[in-house]
Structure formats: structure tokens, C-alpha cells
Image 1 (cartoon, rainbow, N blue to C red):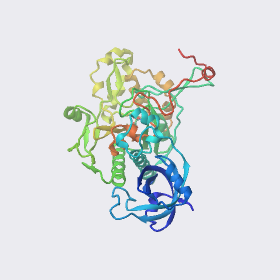
Image 2 (cartoon, rainbow, N blue to C red; image 1 turned 90 degrees about the horizontal axis):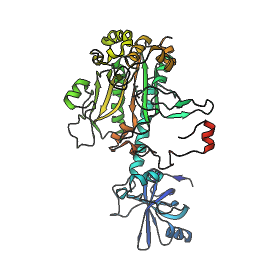
Image 3 (cartoon, rainbow, N blue to C red; image 1 turned 180 degrees about the vertical axis):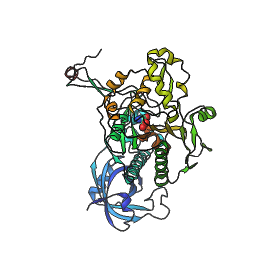
Image 4 (cartoon, rainbow, N blue to C red; image 1 turned 90 degrees about the vertical axis):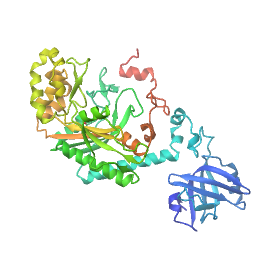
Length: 478
Ligand code: ASP
């Protein structure tokens, strides 16, 4: 007989079935042995009567938590009074005729059936495959799957295409440190892991794709925090022939539909999402990611808002001109600032004048950030699709025209070869799912996260490599 899932057994009262899974918890009641069997779909009580065949009686004496077993028998109603309302299968049990041990398990380093007594995070991450057996983490993985599936369907129905972009790429100026990968064939040269697919998605617009998205892995070598990981996942999206409003409207609709369809227990505080300017939020909340919830004790309340009209540039002592970008160097300023910005291109030779310039800090970008319950869950902008405008931004940042065309040669050429107006956004998917799952940090919604200090305790990385491997790469460790 083929094995069925516990969730399927619920509709099979009186039928002979085979269930397979893990021994969750076991108890002896007189001569009867009871245990909870766990599979990916849930738990089912199994009862082994004292008159079962010898091999089964032997097996049931041996089983301990996390043994992998096959249990065949008849699905029956539990005795009145012994039902468990907390389980979908709580009114039923399997009267086991044949129990077979498929694999044994040593005593796990922490309990699986009772997460309240869970171990330290370090131990949990070292044995992540056991940690993931906890019901809470199974639910988080499944929520993540459903959100991503919904996004793919929603965007596909609206004409978007998912396109993969390279992981081995080139270093880009996105504000964080790049992870570098040495090239064996070209010693002394390096790939960089993408901080985001920013340039690729813009090049896809130049390629005529018009509506792109990707569930994209991004890498940033920054100091990690609760909501940061060396690698994280974005919903990355870009559209051609759009204004700021178009991108914001589409994303707002997608977020609302995700909540309605996947988290119906959640309530969105205000629709349409409030739109606040950077000045407003800084004056009223002293942060650019305000938590607008009227009741912060309600775990099901979601307060989204958009923040717009950010300054394009901010002071930076490390920049040769004294200025860096606040969000994204490829963004377009708001229309009314484009002429002002272009005028700076000419005076770059007098970089020191720029440092104290009064106009630069007034230039606003088309950037929009989406904030949820005090977390920035996404951000994007309309881009400069004309080379001269992009060059003007980079001049304020202290790059000469040649440095820009050398470092960003693909995009510079593409902008001169029929680049459409375009804009997009990226969501920090881990953060969104973290908030939806009511979890305190993104490690709880990532299957195999790194620790807060960027270690993979499960695999033991980062790690040393052999002298041969270094030699092949032409690298010597200082
Ligand atoms: N690439 C940007 C980021 O990763 C998002 C965007 O502007 O689309 O923050």
C-alpha cells in the first residue's frame, strides 16, 4: 500500500492506511502504547494494542523520539474525552497493526516536540535540520513558500517575466562592501557577488523586457544585525514606460493581495497606504521608517506607509566632493531638479566648492520606500535613462566622466542605444515574511541563516581552504 500524509488520513476514517514519519512523543498507558507520529502535514496519534503481532510489539518497545517509522492500520475515532482540539487530526487516531522502524535516531540535542524548552540559538543553528522540524519553523517555511508562489502568479498574470541574473558579477557602488570571488583563470582579478541585480535589471529594460521580476539572492558584506544577513532575498522588479505612481500602485496592490490571500487574520490599518514625505516623517517620528500602528500590542495589525521625497545626496567626509547618495546612484531626481543637477557637472574641477554647496542637499530623488510596522521592507525609484543625467549624478559623487564610463561601461553604452524610461523597486522579502510571521528577526524565516556574526554553524563556514586551492588562485593569505 502506498503511504499517505496525515492530512489525507483525516478523511479516511475506517480505512486501512500506511503513514510514515517521525516519532514525535511517546507515552505508555498501561498495556497500550501511544505515540504521536509526525510528518510534513501534521501529527496523528498512533495506538499500538497489546495484541499486535510480535515484530510490532518489539518495534514499539524500541522506538524513541525522532525514530523514523512506518505505521499501518485503520484510522478510527478517538475515545470520547480523549480528543485533542489543537490538532487537525485530534478527533482521530491510527489503530496500528504493523509498526516498522525505518531508521533509528540518537537522542537529539534538544527537544523537537516541545519548543518552549528550546536550546540556545547557537545549538539550534548547528543542528538546523532538527530545528527546522519544529512546528513554528515548518510554518515559517510554508508561509515563505506561499508568499513567493503568490508573487510569481500575481506578476506573471500582469505580463511580468522572471529573469535570472548572474551571481558572479562585477563590483558595484551600492553602499555596502562587496563579497569578492577570486578568478582562477585571470589571476589578480575578481568577480563580485551582486549587492542587488540593479544594473542587470536596468539592462533588461534596455533589452526590451519591459516587465521584469526576480526572486533574487543579494550579498552584502556588512556588519550583520537582527534584520541583516550576508545573503538575503529580494523581490526585485523593474518596469519600462512608468512613472513613480505606476510602480507604487502595482506594489501596493500586490502587498494587499498577499495579506488578503495568505494572511487573512491580519488587518491592514489604512488603505490606500499613507504617503509621507521624508521631511514629514523626520519631523514627526525622527526616523524614515515610522511605526504607524495605532495599537502596537496587536500582533495582527499591519501599518504600511510609503515614504517619498528623500534628499538625493547627503554629506560624506570620505567622498572627494563631500557628497554621497542616500539610496541609489542610478535613481533619477524629481523632474524639477534635473536642470539644477546637470549644472554641477561643469564645476567638478572645483570639488571643494561642492562641499559647501547649498543646492545639492535640496535635490530630491524619485525614491520611494515602503515601510511596514517600523521596518523598511522595500525601496525603489525611477532611474536616469539618459546618460548625461547619470553622469551628472556621478559627478556630484566625485567620479570623472571617464571613471563612470570605465566602471559602468555596459549601462553607459546601453543608455545611448535606445534605453526606455524605467523604474522599479526591490523588497526585502525576508523582512516582510518576518513581520507576517510575527518573528523577531529574519533568521527565523530563512531555512539556513548565518549567525548574527556571519557564521554558518551548520556547514562551518567561513573556513580555511587548502594551500593547493590558494595556489591555483594565485592567492597568499597575509
Ligand atoms: N537595487 C535597490 C536595492 O537593492 C532597489 C531598487 O532601487 O530597485 O536597494
